[in-house]
Length: 108
Image (tube, rainbow, N blue to C red; front, side, top):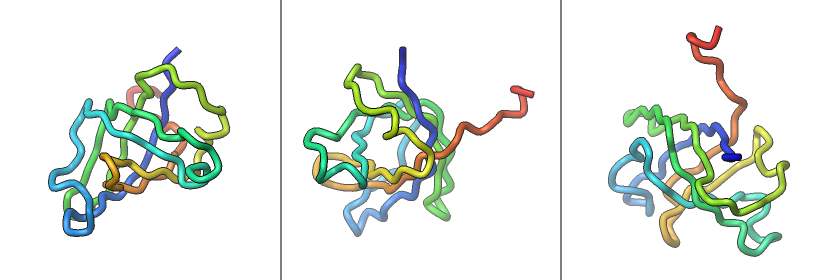
């Protein structure tokens, strides 16, 4: 079973170590949990941003993400409100928060 989550994020400007270009649909990134990063070795996971909304003016976005690899971790790590860092190598390129699933207009 594929593990997924919905996030809201803010991109860090390039001049402060962030990405030069915004995320794109279906791209891969690494994520680490702010709460568990120092407590749990190897708490970094790969994610794929499947669906994506992003406003370059505000640097704010939303994404539906999946964990493409079967790296088990506690279910509590997916609770809404958990803070995340999206990373590329040693650089934090965005800060995110897990949010509840949003209903689409076609879902009733």
